[in-house]
Image (cartoon, rainbow, N blue to C red; front, side):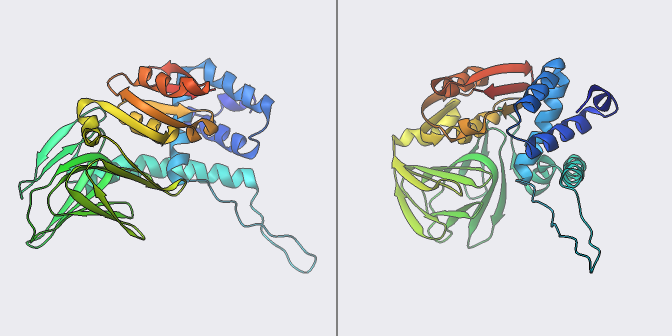
Length: 313
């Protein structure tokens, strides 16, 4: 993208254009250098691109348009790859501004928290929910059932023992069922984690898995089912502003850290997200926590602005 072209476009349009170019030529070193120079020229550039990158993560990889081969016996329509992707990203930006995930979450949720906020909620049955940062739940209680949907984020549940009214937590495609116990559920994207502090729970996806105190499991489309055992008190770590990772994908840990950072965390090296981390991290200092997470793998962290954290290696 030339300087003249950049001047004629808004920051959002420039960022969307860069997203298209980088998707088309991910291995072009000269293009990547030009992009990095554009980012370094103005912190607003990084913020605009972070918004576009976030949209791309939420919407998933944009599909290729259907292509047809022209033949002599008929005329066909053809959508050039770059123009189609540019249109799709621009449309995604407009839709996100009007119907962003936060707006949708606010509409669906009964209780929410802001970035870095923790909240304790007492439900009508006497159960207590400790809602983690940037999280949301919706309730569906009837005389015979108690259901909570974790829309996003993390929550620790102290469930009032009522055998006649089973307690369920729905997170994505995962359902956790209990009668009376204390446990944590964390949900982001297609990843769900459950850890039990006391009692027993049954976690159901395609199969039914029983967990006892200290047991944990994590389910995601990328890693599948993972299980382990740790100290039961780890289930309440977020209430003390701590993040505990046990052989956890680095990208998953950064997603959790994002809920405690007021701006946007941008990972420039996708392969870094696949590394595995184990440790305890202080979420009240997201910058230091991010550095502790990525430094063992050669990662670096820099602040492009007070609201944009760039991670690369």
